[in-house]
Image (tube, rainbow, N blue to C red; front, side):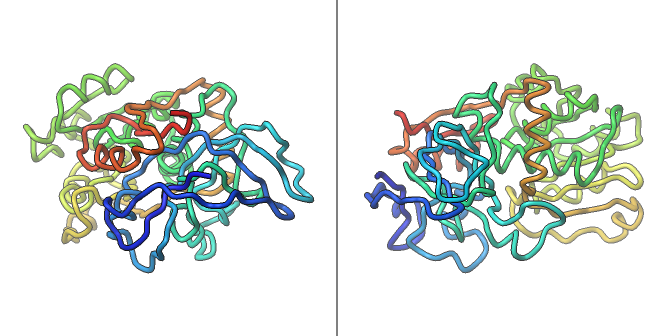
Amino acid sequence: MRTLELDGGFGLENLKLAERPAPTPGPGEVLVRMRAASLNYRDLLMVQGAYGAGARLPLVPFSDGCGTVEAVGHGVGAFAPGDRVATLFFQNWISGPPSLKGLSSALGSPIDGCGRELAVFREDGLIKAPPHLTDLEVATLPCAALTAWRALFEDARLTPGDTVLLQGTGGVSIFGLQFAKAAGLETVITSSSDEKLARAKALGADHGINYKTAPEWSKAVRQATGGRGVDFVMEVGGAQTLNESLRCIRIGGHIAVIGVLSGPQEPVSAPVLIGTNARVQGLSVGSRDMFQSMSRALSLHKLRPVVDRVFPLAEARAALEAMASGSHFGKIVLDYSL
């Protein structure tokens, strides 16, 4: 079977297609023929060797995938051959709060990921795909969609009428926009591109702010909310955005820190943090139970992920380069049928 493999060192130049023997499922395991995988910024950092520490080579990248069950091992009752399934980002986080065991079980490192034509997963490391979505759309769900879902509804517990700020137009923020509109939330979205802001407004964004022309964008956010500030911020920027997020959050609001697109470090203004009484919470994806809840909501509202660009498996390096450019709106996907 074809497998994407990072070997011989980190860097895009070391990501190549290789051949590996087809695996077989053991007791409690499911063999999946992968149909698609989607890219996350984490995948780019992982391939570049810039994500955390301790990644081991060779490595099969990509945490998010959709496939069809080929065979099941002894004792598997939840799935049968022919079922369409989505992978779980954290294979060992089934329910409850995050734990070291759960957060140490991510696909794409330390566990080999979805960049292969056949893969074996534990039975509880998969869920059935929402039936109204295509394979490419399902592949976008495990990381970006679930991160947005958890931030908005599991941690912040927002209610209709609340106002949310979504930074940028990548996968997490666009999912956040779609979920927020379905839940009756008012939405503010930022981007460096007026074209992308127009696309976001077509998806239902109530306010758009270009942070290139308005670098102190917290002032525009305050203006859009009548001076009150937003109830929630989806903080994906990191070094160059966190203090602006603190300046536009309402008293007692919630900032979900999920990304470091502009860098990992910036001194946080302690007086501003104290003055806002805001809750600043780091989070990474979510559990199987959260995925099941999100899947029900997707099916109920017939929400469809935004797939921006599609590449063949053999062009995974080009797909990662496209992600590095920041030109995408929504998700970049690999289609294994191409």
